[in-house]
Length: 158
Figure 1 (cartoon, rainbow, N blue to C red):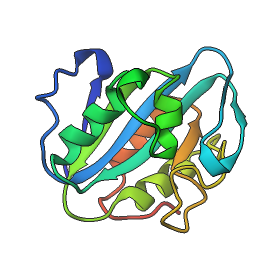
Figure 2 (figure 1 turned 180 degrees about the vertical axis):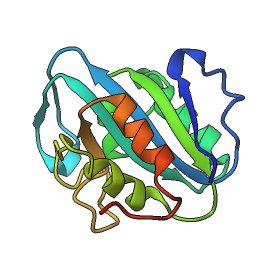
Figure 3 (figure 1 turned 30 degrees about the horizontal axis):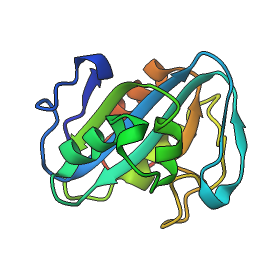
Figure 4 (figure 1 turned 30 degrees about the vertical axis):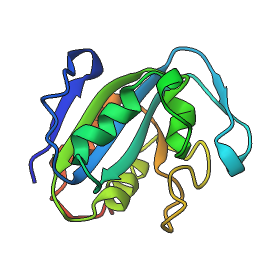
């Protein structure tokens, strides 16, 4: 599996393919942020790095899903938990891999297995699986990207 990473400022819409796959949105919060993602209630996110892991299987694949996440809040309805975050926080980096395999939960567990990682909002982005969450607070974005790119595809961390 081939992984890719870009800074959101470099995104033009053509780098990410319109194929199915798995993606990670990286956020850096300079200050704490309070969000209310639907039925999950109101939560405070401390400053620091966060990663949201998602999958894109519908029409337009990865390109369409990432484009939706990067649209301004005024141009989209809050449908998914992550919409409540993207409406108020800037996506700094995007990582993705093309493939039909369902890797979303594996990637979330891999990131959560990093020393210093934690679940800031239980069940965030994980209403259709048994994962603790698909939003993970990270020790750093670099550590997270290294964890995704060095582990064998499809493997789960220790």
